[in-house]
Amino acid sequence: MTRTISTSMSGILERLELERPTIVTSEGLARMLQEEGVLTPARIVAARLRQKGWLLPTHRRGAWEFVPASSAGAYSSNDPLLPVESYMAKHGPASFGLTFQTAAWMHGIADRVPAHLEVAAKDGQSARSMLGEMATSVFSPRLPYMVRKGIPLLAPESVVAHMAAKPCAVRSWQSALEWLPGLTELIKPESMLEELSGRSSAVISRTGYLIQGMRQDIADEIYAHNKPRYKTWFGPRTALLRHDNKWLVADTLLPFDPRKMDKVTK
Image (cartoon, rainbow, N blue to C red; front, side, top):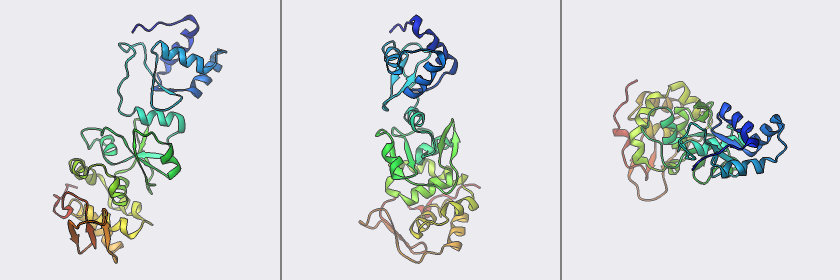
């Protein structure tokens, strides 16, 4: 597809080429038109740019991927983070963070990004606004979000706590075996205790149970501050796979015994 530049659009395309936004929103385009003194409505300009292949659709209404002239044609960059970037362009970054394998990938631990980006939304309202192509669950971290490539993600301690808080939200615990040890190597005792502060005894017990083989030092710290008193389920209340007498955890979910995981170097 040959992408032409009309005289009326040349100023806007020049501005887009200069700024190189990954995502163009209808609101951002309207501001740009106003600044450039263009009276044509943003919706019409967007339609013309889409028709010529300068803007490609995303799954979010009013947000498009910009394809610069340096590209071979009207082809998507296939950036796996595009769904998150288009959401942020419309809603801002404050309501969510990447989690699970997606966060591990951003931290440089997992060697691949999952097909569906995993997102921890701060609350139910934020979760409902997320795209269907993203796997979203509600989890509000105690630790501040970290930022990689301009995108918020959970700190390693927060990812572990999220796994313990919502074990059934983890899409594949078998795949987690590939990156969880590397992630637990990054966690710090004081940060893990801060992330667990004020959380339920069930989340605290599951966290200690989950990391005890890999990070016994931190599990012992958790146990010293929060000795379990009640039985906790790890997974749905179905057939028992194993029971941990120390953490009082009835595990019906994990395809591995966390007590037998190799200790990670720290």
